[in-house]
Amino acid sequence: MQEEAGSRTLWETACVDVRDSANPVLARARRCLGRVNARHPWDHNEHFHRWILRNLPARRRAAVDVGCGTGVLAGKLAPHFARVTGIDADEGMAAAAGARLAQDPRVSIRHCRFEQFAAEAGDGQTDLITMVAVLHHLDLEDTLARIPGLLAPGGRLLVVGLARADSLPDLAADLISATANPVMGLIRHPRPARQAGGPAPGQPVMPVRDPATTLAEITAAATARLPGATVRRRLFFRYTLRWDKPPVTAPPPGSRNPATTR
Image 1 (tube, helix red, strand yellow):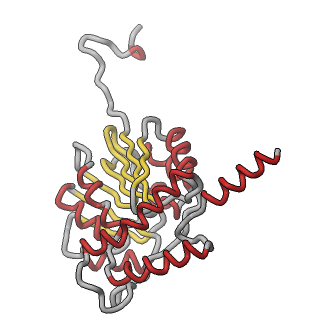
Image 2 (image 1 turned 90 degrees about the vertical axis):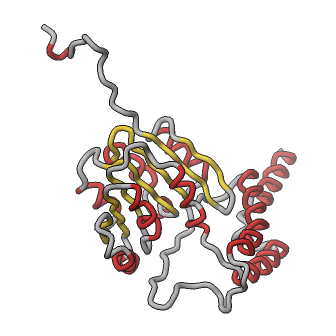
Image 3 (image 1 turned 180 degrees about the vertical axis):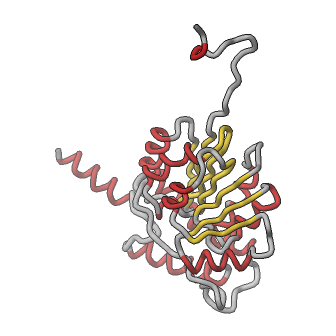
């Protein structure tokens, strides 16, 4: 029992989220990295837009970007789809996205919650649904349960998300990410910024929420709701989720519909 208690204490000490730990060593390192990151800022979410663009489905009639923010990803999807819909629950974000993409007839922006959009959308009309840093703002189980009804056969869900760290692999990934983050900042933004980050003048403040679910919980929910989904831990405090809705297969030539067989 004493050995088990000691192991549990060691586990609990090791499995801390380096992003908000009160450990003085980690806190000091975080402040130092924070100063470097502020001087050389870069967007973690936009970094993964390339992953999304590399994984577009074969059929590209309609795409929906859930939590579209200021419309950056929706604008990148527009050249690849006949129509793109961006939705955001934040009024300021939806307004900024609408202003950014007002001249693109392929894109429409809606200020609404995902649940409202899903209830009003036609069944099986969407070839791609994207969610970047938004799934942890939504009810995980309910959201994943709605995806199959929204996607067309052969359609695809692509998620870039945040998870709560609670394991040694999470800790290792966070430590590597924290170390690599300023290096990426120097590459992406070599000239030091004149002031700390924040929204540009006239731009809305991005809604922020800490993730409450762990990667294991997200994987379990995806496995239950979206059989065959692929969930992978990524650097820079993100994970990716990909799921393809099975296509409709035609019956073999010469076969008859059992429902009409007498």
